[in-house]
Image (cartoon, rainbow, N blue to C red; front, side, top):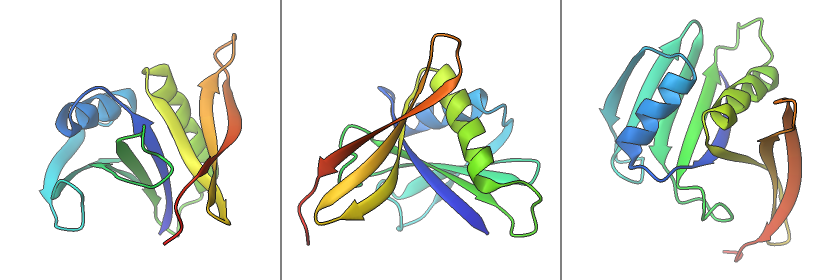
Length: 136
């Protein structure tokens, strides 16, 4: 499996956020699952083609303003590049009104983030920033 995560900001609860994420990604088939591995004890899974998407609450250090995580999974046998699919997913999420970011590095108590936005022509752009986090 090839897996990538992004973090999103949403004013809605996790169920409404999941519904809006799946609508933005044109994923019609999705459902709730229970798991103690997730912050709220639940997460949402949708599938479209060979792509699986999960939406869950998240408490990732350095992403305090992003309350939710969206996980993209592609099978290892996929002919698609997972990073290109991630960019397409981020584009659709930003177009749907979500603030979207992902971790691209961590060193010396600093997380490097890549934030996604649209330029004036509605093309995806990426901006980097850093956030200091307490080291464990």
